[in-house]
Length: 172
Ligand code: AMP
Image 1 (cartoon, rainbow, N blue to C red):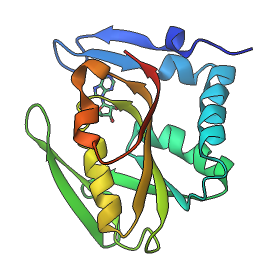
Image 2: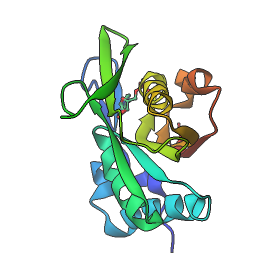
Image 3: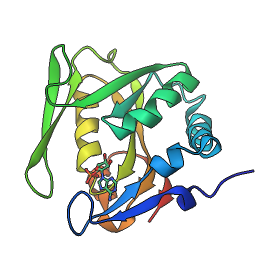
């Protein structure tokens, strides 16, 4: 039996700031069969594609990328917020609605030419994942696809990701 995943995603109005409708996935994560369904769906999609690694974006992207990497039998490469990775890093700064953010990847995280899928929980404006894809390229990898559990289609994040195939499980 399959669960309608969108029934398990909770809308929290005005979080973290007024005017934002936050998509809360904790209500999906706490449902064992639904969480398994998400990971199984991703694993079925990416099995047999010859991927070398799964790249997960801090922090909610880690929740999905780690079990996916395990299921695919490949490594997990974290893209983290500035200052969190201990080794030498590549860094990309990108604009948010207010201010900017910096993401990093270890310079030696990927073998040259590694083919990866980049995973995050949600695609909004696309700035976060576009920065992560740039980091993958700087580290010598190739992005085969970017994958999300949720896509907020009305924010047109796909426009920032024109170079990459995009997969999302639930669209709003
Ligand atoms: P963006 O860079 O605009 O695509 O924002 C994507 C990142 O911000 C993801 O890592 C999400 O976890 C988070 N995010 C943005 N908007 C929302 C939202 N409405 N609900 C939950 N998370 C969000």
